[in-house]
Image (cartoon, rainbow, N blue to C red; front, side, top):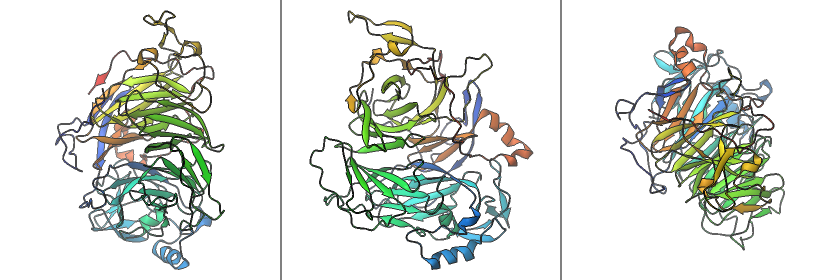
Length: 560
């Protein structure tokens, strides 16, 4: 089931367009055809001098218009008044027509014209003197942030320009993970975790204003030897805590997770006691109120591979090299429940927008669905031929409701090192659930209900559960299976008008949704903005009495 990761015939970062690699530029779903709109990548010469190759990760940043009270540049603990005044002279305080010049990913200068008109259509842009223009540069905008080797790249999602707007070079280590906070009221909104274990925070808007290739006005958090060890462990995942202004967490390959406060100095001395029992979950707080990080969570003996917060910030999910999903009450610093994969490490995890379900994927080539109400795995999906490297719920997708039966359906996607994108439908109240037969013979099947689970009882708080027998848990089949890249995939993101996929080498593809692909080719398509965040009150509808024990299995799989 789970061998070494599959590697398709690729062509490096370029990965090739659909025609170059023999890949189709569309795939079909029951609601219509998704079309490849355009691609994003980097054209810089990459340097792998800090620990070898890295895997590209993708962050979509929805940059809001600057509040009038914020001025031209948010203040940060490490930003001097001279830097802020220079930024103010460069850009001004409004969305005017000031012309800026800054370097692109290939080192060439590019002229940018600000504009009071926000956005730009899917694949449309404005130019000045034949140069690429970014109409949403100093106001609202949707940007793609991705890493490759020792460089972080920033691209404008609403532009057809393939090369990035900005490249940020790190001389001491490779950036491995990053996260953007769209709700940041002031200061830094972008955090970056490094292969050295160091962490940086910075302002995305300030990076776009600066023409250089070095991080501008960044705050450096040196984890270093805070646990008394001389071996710094690499960062594996970073995340802002929802509803907690300025608080973020960073996980590491040594099984530790650190909690930071961006409003505190990142260079203060902070030493945590050595972990005495590597197998026990333990939280230690910094002794000084000025220390940063403010706390260390020791979660497991091996690497934490990914972390994800529930939409309300109440719960933190982690997956690790030991194959376990762990869900914590973040405020209480308490393990709620955990469960194991069927084989090998878990590599990725994510929450549904209503916080009721989690997805995980990993080295067993499976996608697993976990219920917060039931505190256990409630379905597993088979369809990938190699490790599952990315999972995401589609919060923008609406199920068919003409017959009144489409209310309790979740759409989610997964990508793997088999170069495939899979789409799945998780339909509530429409599955047959296997029951354990009293005589341990073949299980019987009947309609789902909470009592129809592989185990009736909700596991006790704080207990890690073994994986149940596969025949006792509902199985899902993918709705769509499509080979979207020539190289192994590392992630996917859903936006209102598209699906974004990224491969390990840093090639991003934008797949327009069926209802957008037609509109985007019309002359008036400039009014469509590709990326827009899902409102906080927008959640996938599901009835209060719906149980995680009932799902629908598609009758067939569309292989495109």
